[in-house]
Image (cartoon, rainbow, N blue to C red; front, top):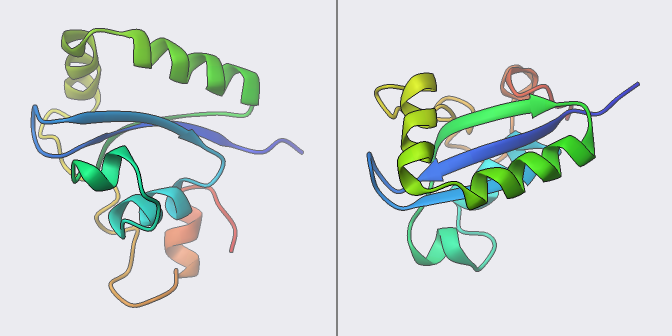
Length: 114
């Protein structure tokens, strides 16, 4: 059995500050970003909206893709986001419940198990 890995892009707003990351648990990681649990770039610059993500089952591919996207110029990243999510909607807006904890449904949406 293989584990899913996610390469994702967060934005502060449409055409705002961007952040590229990789994780093996997308719901958990987005929750950490949105709740400012970890000090760092996304907390400092309020980069909390999930605007793009990809999934792979190979950790090496995920890490290579993350590095590739981080090297891309801003224009290319924006084109990638707009091809996938033209309105720059927060793709995780319904994943993270307002109450503490995650639901089984939200967990399945991102291919994770609780």
